Amino acid sequence: MSYSKHESAIIDDGAEIGDGSRVWHFVHICGGARIGKGVSLGQNVFVGNKTTIGDNCKIQNNVSIYDNVHLEEGVFCGPSMVFTNVYNPRSLIERKNEYRTTLVKRGATLGANCTIICGVTIGEFAFVGAGAVVNENVKPYALMVGVPARQIGWMSEYGERLALAIDAEGEASCPHTNAIYQLRNGNLTKLNSII
Image 1 (cartoon, rainbow, N blue to C red):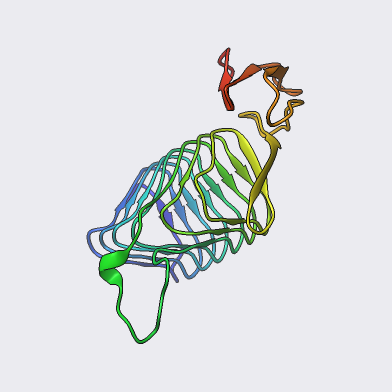
Image 2: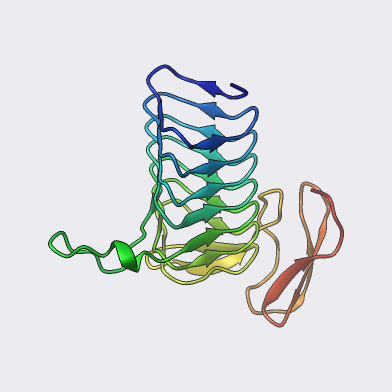
């Protein structure tokens, strides 16, 4: 076994877990799950069958990665944040054939206790604040807060807030790495590579 596993964790036959990953207390990983290298799954995490978790993701305590949720490389899921996979659930009506796919792209951060409503895409290096409820697609590098979530700014790949207005074109640098970001036509791009 090329990953570490606490004795209380349950890993069903067929699950794929990459080298150097760490599976902590009371985790349950279903047999269809695909988990990359260097992933950390905190206490009481659940990973469903139809899921993928990319390399170097960090899933904090009490997070459930349900079917049809896909995380690219380097995604951070804060403690007790929530994914859904059915838009309008009812206990008396089975809707497993209505699961909506949720995609969280490379480097995104999902803060503690936030909720991601199924069917959305969270862009690269987006930052969802603690407690926010996301029910629409999120642009790359967007800083999202509130219920429902709204964009209040932009974040660098390093995780620093950029000095750019949401709707004003221009350039800004990350205060930590000095990487330059450019805002044009409502979309942010990085002009030079640091990470």
